Image 1: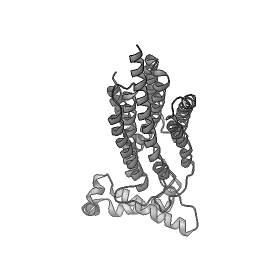
Image 2: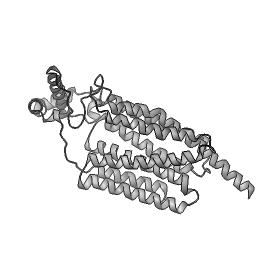
Image 3: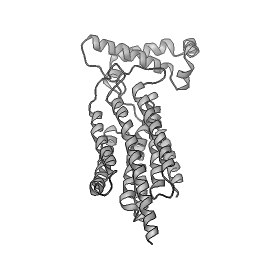
Length: 326
């Protein structure tokens, strides 16, 4: 199977799995009787018959095109009424449906995270084009790096969509594609460290990673969508990615002067990941820890592509010198 066919098959697998229904998860805010009563009354008042037709007639086109419904508006309105009561009573701000309350901007449910994801995607696209302009296709790592860039770009697209409008499908695609990026980074490391001399091993290992991703997605889709399990898996594969790249960087830092870029990237990503542990209500109802994490990864992405360009050009020159010697 070619790389392009494998990529298309993997994307179809992710889309099919994302479309499967998952159980609803509640949080303190949406379990509040006052919130539930508000939601029921709002839906009865606005989301049926003539009231629903009136809602649709006055709803901005950009809201309807991005999937915002009358029930979504009721959830949003009742969420802020509940938050107001909590704040007035001196209680901690609660989460709703697994998320902090965010101030919606236009059709963006989480404006800061959506905008930061979009910027990450644009940075990936710009650096992908720079890589293609700087590195000839004859470089040994060219096609593997291009594939990694497209997997990363796809993940940032789904991250932008998910933070724009949270649904079962967009949430799953965001999670599944994030796992795919980490696994592809591991594959990229495998090809760079072992696969150039042992392509059969790299191909077999790549097949194993695709199978692992398929099993991971199947469990979350068909058995149970377990957030804790998903987090644990991503931590494990993230640490494997970290230590494998770091070991290679340490071994080659004297011989390859540009390796520091890769070392900084893998270490920074682990440090920045700690932001996810700082779970706090959003500042100004816009910036939470996850949004700050997304903003922080923009320069890290650019630096990693810079490393890939340097390394690919080095390998091209090394190959050229071997051919001349032969």
